[in-house]
Image (cartoon, rainbow, N blue to C red; front, side, top):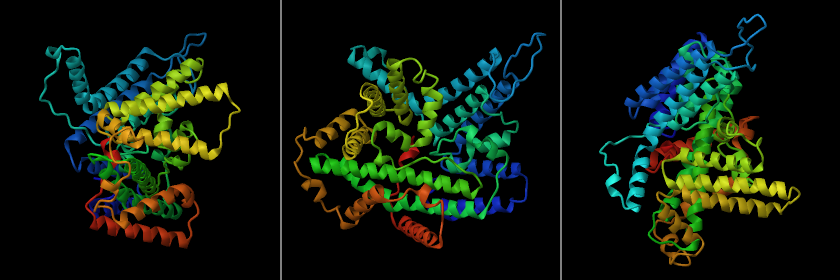
Length: 493
C-alpha cells in the first residue's frame, strides 16, 4: 500500500485517524498500540508473510537493547563498587554489552543482505567465474528471494536505536509496544524519512494533538500528494519514453534525464511531505528531509539538502565511526568515498548503484581536497550550480539505468558519443508527446527553480494557503482516479 492510492486515501487513512482521535483521551500507550496495528496492516497488505520478518527483527532488537541497557557500563570506584552512570556518560563497555550490539547489527545486516543482495551476489559471482574461465565454480540456484517492502528503511531505523542505546545517547524502551511503534509506524515505514531513535524517543512517550499540528499536517500531506501525482507522474512518462527508447539524440537524452531528475525529486520529496504531514496528524514532529537540492552549489551542499535523513544517518553511523575527518586528509577522503559507496549499494543491488555512490563519493573527496588546497577559491554562483547539477544528472543516469551497458549507452547519447540522431525527432516528435506533458515539465522545472519549500510554506498558514492546498489536493485526487500511471520509485529500495 502506498499513500497515493485510493485504498489508502478513502479507506485506510480515514479509519486510522478516526480511531486514533477517539483514543485522544486514552493513554499514550494505547494510541501507540493502535499505530502498531495500523503499521502492520499497512505493511502486510500486499505481502502478509513479511509481517513475520519485521516482527521477529523488532522483537530481537528490543530484547538486545534491554541487555545493553542493563549492562551499560562498568564503573569502578576505589572500593570496587559498580554504579550506573548518567545517560550520555562514558566508561568502559562490558563484554555483554558489546556482544549484544554486535549480535543486533549482524542480524539486521544479514537479513538485509540476504533479501536485498542474494541474487546480486550470485549473479556477480557467476559473471566473475565466467570471465575467469572457471564456469564450473558458478552457483546454480532456483531459490527466488523477494525483497520485503521498506526493509532498508526500517533496518536503518532499528540500527539507529540499538547504537544510540549502546552509546548512551538514548534510553532503551522498556515497553515493547512503544518500541514497535517506532519501527512500524506507517507514515515513515516504507520510504522514510529515516528517523533516528533519539529524535523520536520523547515523542513516543509523550506528544500532543493540536489544531495547528493538524492544519499543518493536512497542508503537508495535500502538497506532497499533488507533487507526486500532478508533477512526478507526468515527468515520469517522459523519462520512461526516453530511457526505454532504442536510440535517442542529444536533445532527447538531456530531456529524458532532466525529466527523471524532476520525477525522482517530486516523487520522493512528495512522499516525504506526505509522511511528515501524516506524522503531524498523529501528533509527531518528523525531521525535514529535503531543502531545495537542485539549487546546491556543490555535491557537498547537495547532500545537505537531498534525503537529509539518510545523509545524517550515514554521517552519524558510518562516516564518523570510520574515523570521520579526525585522521588526516587522506583518510577523510577515503572515509567519504567509502561512505557514499556503501550508500549507493544501500539503494539497490546493482553495479549501477555502486557506481552512482562511487561518483558522489569521488566528487565529495575532490571538493574536500580543493577546499583545503584553495580555500579562498570562489567561482561564479551560476557556474557552480550548473556544474553541480550536471554531476547530479550524470549520476541519475546511473541510478535510473538497469545495467552498466544501458547507462554507458545513455551517457554516450548525452555527450554525442553514440550514433543516435543529433536532435530528437524520433522521440520528442513522436505521437506520445502532447502539450500536456511539455507543460508539466515546464511547471515542474519552474517549481524547482522558483517555488518555496513546503517546510517554510506551511509554517504560517492562512486561509488563502489553505484554499491553495485544498485545490491542489483535490486536483491530485481527481488525477489519481483517472490515470493508470502511478509508480513509486523508492518502493524498490
